[in-house]
Amino acid sequence: MPQPKVEKLITAVDIGSWKVSALIAGRTDTGELAILGTGQRESRGVRRGFIADMERTELAVRETVEQAERVAGTNIEDVWVSFSGGSLVSDVVTVERDMGGYRVEQADIDDLLTTGQQGIDPDGRIVLHAQPTCFTINGKVPVKKPLGMHADLLGVDIHVVLADGAPLANLDLCVR
Figure 1 (cartoon, one colour):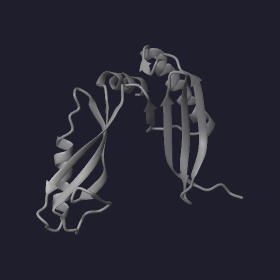
Figure 2 (tube, helix red, strand yellow):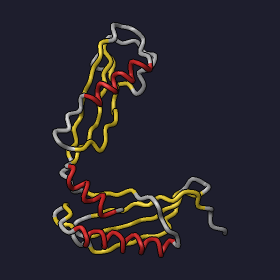
Figure 3 (cartoon, helix red, strand yellow):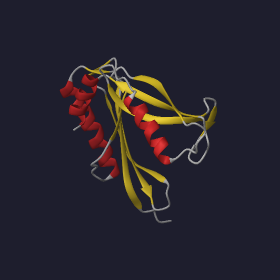
Figure 4 (cartoon, helix red, strand yellow):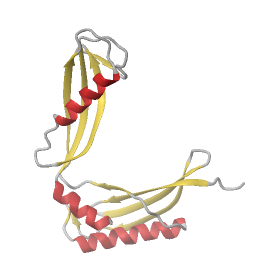
């Protein structure tokens, strides 16, 4: 049986304190993911979730990715990186807006999200992720899409993930 044609490569690298792992997958023309190659090396230069030696960390990442590329028989250009360092913080920001019983328009939703984004206090950290998770009508009723509904009060919960900037900058230098 012929192998399905791979249309798009997806590469992920996980940098941990014990090991660095890489995975190259391809989305096939049938929409499935096919694992094309993997790589794994002992993590060198990472201690307790922080980069302690940039040169050794960079070498471990390069060796891992090169191993996955050899197995996959391809060269990669873009990578999704997972790293647990950086003192990650997760929080939820809640914002509400008085609607006066009127119909919710897209502009109302956009304004609410903008207000929510502006209300994030990073406290010296970098915002990695800010995504609306739940809209509410009248302070209680959770709704997926408030567009077109009538409400006295429109609210949104925004999930925010923050990280310290220095560990991210070090990571960026190691994976370039």
